[in-house]
Image 1 (tube, one colour):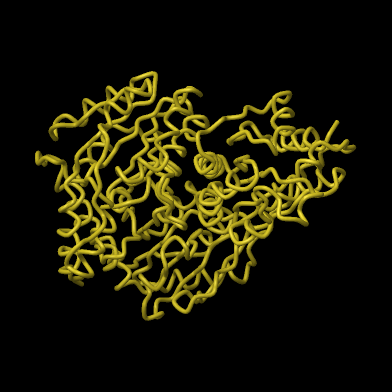
Image 2 (cartoon, helix red, strand yellow; image 1 turned 45 degrees about the horizontal axis):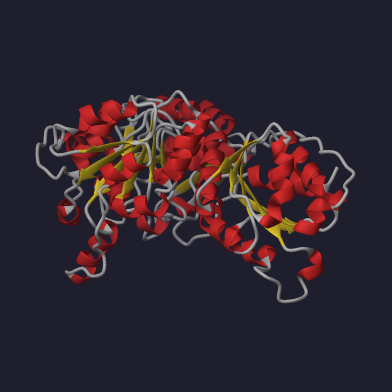
Length: 546
């Protein structure tokens, strides 16, 4: 047995089902070992796509997604997806090939110090320099990647070490006992909740990672406290629930800002500051905050909790608080008055027949077609802002948005991973025409590995989000417009199905047809982004009424 074979045995022991990546000269021994294993190697068309697939796989499963590249440019191509996973709290293990240790002291072909390069975008990384250390390095990598807060790790394997004889066995994957929140903190949190007149729950992705959706819903319902979610906290509480105030996170003011303006207590559950800066909802740092999470609160001048309830089991923390908190005869929280306005805004474009289609209408219709368990993967761009605001979820992890790193190009590779994890669910990759062209080559990967999903292109012929910001700041735009290929012919040239929306009434039947195909499909939909500036004007005129 050589080191590469021992490495792959350790990956099997960790439950790895897929490795996403590209072959290269310096990872030949690893590829040969994978071929003899139970792991399926997904050959991608670009290393960035491989890293994004591992990123979304980790976010959906809670198990580390694994990506593999060769050295030099292969490794640098992984960086964006690795950084995205690290900032968005998705467990990921990146493995890179490397020149032999006998060539690292000289200017060798394609050599970079990859351990140094990956250090800023990972929780931990290491190079295997002794074959016998492989089991320890792999076990440590997976343990760190999956520990709260999850993130990316990196293993670098020089080609001469990969070929060396190795003796060893995979280490046991031990299960850590959970730690629970202190009763003193639980009691203090319950007391503050009892005293609050207008409390508001802010829920983030940590509640999804902790599988605390049911507990959050029970907690909010029993205490009659409205709930707002971050971009990454969608679906923790069903959007149809009468206490659900949907999503916050836009840089412009929105209805939910009125709720924060008037609250006297924010109960932050599984909230991570990177999801939406507290300076946007607590600029004066005067709102009392209860922090309920598996990790202590980060330091921020606008986020100084009066109580921190920290324990591995968020559901247990909520249950313990619930047993001690009573809100009988309390007035209806002010934030609940906002729900009618939020709902009316959502419904406003339900019957709009304008063309190009307004983003609100497009997303409203998308929601009508997708089932409660179906998955939308959002790329980054102007459409992401509209999806975040208007696409609402019944279940956690059914609308995935790259938020911490906000990386363009994630939607199509992410949809491949989502379809591998949930082959029986409908999956839509929602992307702008700019994001589409960044990783559209992975549609060939999707076809080859048998993951049929729909790519919905919000087509405006430019970088719409940047134009939106330019218009807001300077009153004009520059360098944001480009030409596009014929997306229908592009899809058909790859053996996919291609569709073009030509009226507002076209979209729903086209989407239903595309979702029924046995191959990936692409829908080219012109979108009216004049709504961007209209929303900016509307949000600027928003007044909060008590």
